[in-house]
Length: 103
Image (cartoon, rainbow, N blue to C red; front, side, top):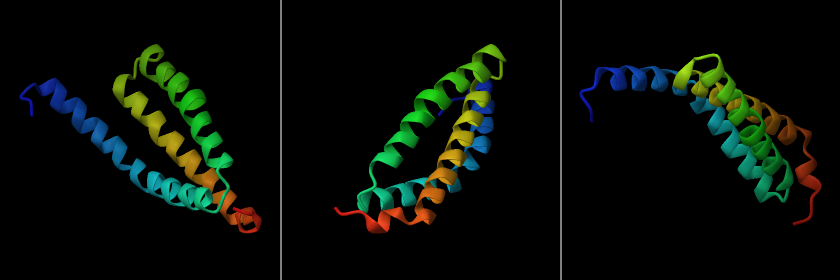
């Protein structure tokens, strides 16, 4: 969509980073959706809020702006956040507490 080499290079770098995010996003979306469907709505909401407001924004700002990693640093935080949330939701799912909730 552009012939600007800087934009193309930046897009290429970010796409390579974000490719690692896809499995984590899939696990998080599926298991968090399952928890919500089973009535455990609070846990996915809290992990999302913490991930976005307390991890992505401040750590992304720190890596991207303060440390000068730019857009690549911001996307690295996005991948780390998605991996952490996927692990937390998988842990919650494996606990099985959602099986005893009344909807």
